[in-house]
Length: 113
Image 1 (cartoon, one colour):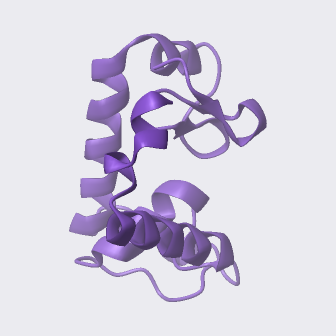
Image 2 (image 1 turned 180 degrees about the vertical axis):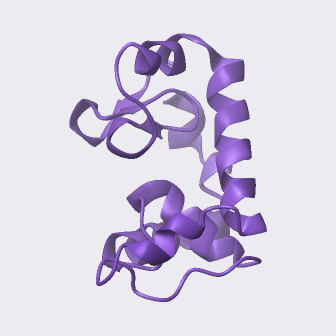
Image 3 (image 1 turned 180 degrees about the horizontal axis):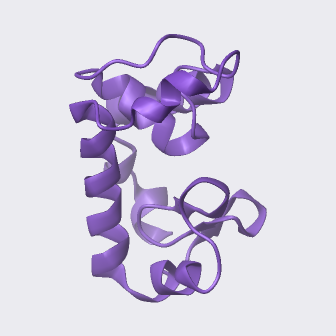
């Protein structure tokens, strides 16, 4: 839970990102509450996947594709970048896929932190 990423803009187990998901004082809750951090991640990913984030189609020119429901990888990328299939989202998707393929969590370096 103590991990802070993105130059101080992401917090906790699932790295809730300040620019896209919270503002103070709410961010403090994501830093301090593991259950809230995990629940929010699951909720927002499911909301993207279920098609409940239609506002993504209102940000003309900022998405790499038109937002649509049922796109798991698009949902993962939007979690990171706040946009649908834009270049930062694509990079994040590639990194997640790489770590899945390499099973990073099984490495000694990961376990020893």
